[in-house]
Image (cartoon, rainbow, N blue to C red; front, top):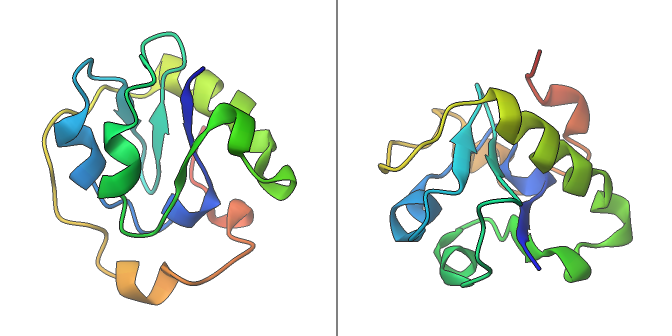
Length: 108
């Protein structure tokens, strides 16, 4: 099993989760974080740290968010590892409860 970052993270990018990850599985894009499924050891430490409840065990990802399984794996190959907490994006509070944000995901 692995953990997956889902849509709630888009345009928020809280990074509390990266500091508790014992294996540096998080990768950072412009407005989103992903977890490398090949590195994640399923320790669940990150889940409780996410203030917008964006992280799920892969088997518990809601049906409407299943595309994020492949997206995490794909983007982790290209984005740099992040290991230190940073400030969330400036409009994170506004975006925290917004749904249907997939079109706002910035990636190559």
